[in-house]
Length: 122
Image (cartoon, rainbow, N blue to C red; front, side):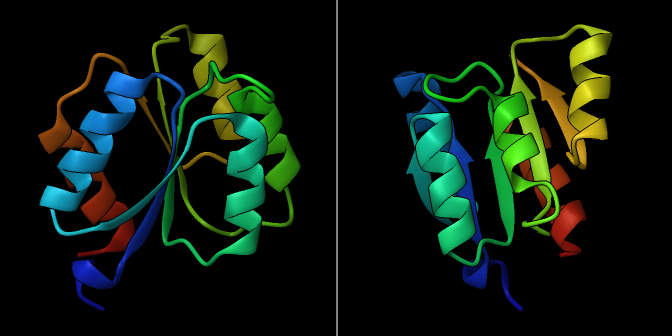
C-alpha cells in the first residue's frame, strides 16, 4: 500500500496546530481528516477505516484519555499522542490506554512523518 492510500485522522482543537498538521501530512502524501473535539474524534474513528490517528490530549467535549478509553477493545488503529503535556504520568497513562507513540509539543513535522512511516511500515 502506498502512503497515498493511507488515511490519517487528526484530533486537535487548536486551529493553527490542526492546520499545520493537515497541511504537513497532506504534503507528505497522506489523506487526512480532522476532528476538533474528542467526542467527534471518537465518532469518526469508529465509523471510518483509518490507518493511524494523531490525538491531542487536551480537547473539548472528551479529553484524549477519555477518547483512548472509549476506543479500548473497539479500535485496533494505532494512535500517536501529540500533546503539550510532557509529564511522565500523562505519557504512561496514554500508553496504558493503548497509544503506540507519544510526541511532545512543540514538535518537528519531519519527525512526526518519520514516526508515522515507521508505524505504517513504509
